[in-house]
Image (cartoon, rainbow over all chains, first blue to last red; front, side):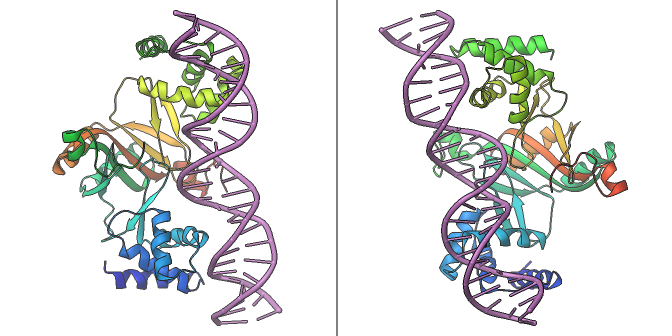
Length: 155
Length: 155
DNA sequence: CTGCCTGCAAACTCTTTGCACGAAT
DNA sequence: ATTCGTGCAAAGAGTTTGCAGGCAG
């Protein structure tokens, strides 16, 4: 999905809900789609402020659910306290996250059997699956060779 | 794994680290293994206090990592802010969580292919897998029939 | 004028930590 | 004596919310 298609989708979503396309929302949208990796709310705030310095933290947090709700952004929770976001791309939900145990870097990889697998598992319980996520913790190459990741932040 | 085997394992783990088996740690252990479902730190505190009212929140939070570290407890993060715990059972890591979108009830189900699948996915990236989790969001039976889960808490 | 949108700051939730006292070795 | 363990309260991180003013329709 191109940036333009995503913007269109976002604007349609807002219009459907009787919400307005404001400068701040657009700045946050553009900031989100300028990211090259997974990003946090805080990183998004920083970037959005470079585009429009009137953007506040509150507005970022209020806009993120609008963007995930319109399916232009996907939320990724790796259980590290903060949530990550990324452009929803091609709408493919069959994606697994592989997270490095040391530096928390997130890799994404196509996992074509996952959806079928999630469905199988849910239906065994009589539940109707809505979404599924395969999350793998792993040691990245740098960690294995040097015992430490270069871009590790914590500790 | 029986409760007794788990207690043994826990005590051995503590001994190996030069840590002591205190009344509070035992109370927290017993509280954990008295639970019938996934539980939060707060629920564990409540229950542990009924056994030994000198148990504090801090000690619960300090003991939880000891119990997960000794592999008698498993941590489950469904991305809802708080973490859940449950006895690690038979040591089987090939378990998927199915979480109801409305009431957040957690179902667990054996997912025998998951480990293989996580490994396949990691190795494609040149990473060494450590653990994997398949998490499925789904609508539970009650939600589908009545539009609302009986044990729903939020909102 | 009605209702959406905003920034600010305070509030909130869950978890972690500094401190001083107490207990085990 | 030394090390570990504790409760308490404060701090911390990330996120949400109440409020008063601003702006669009």
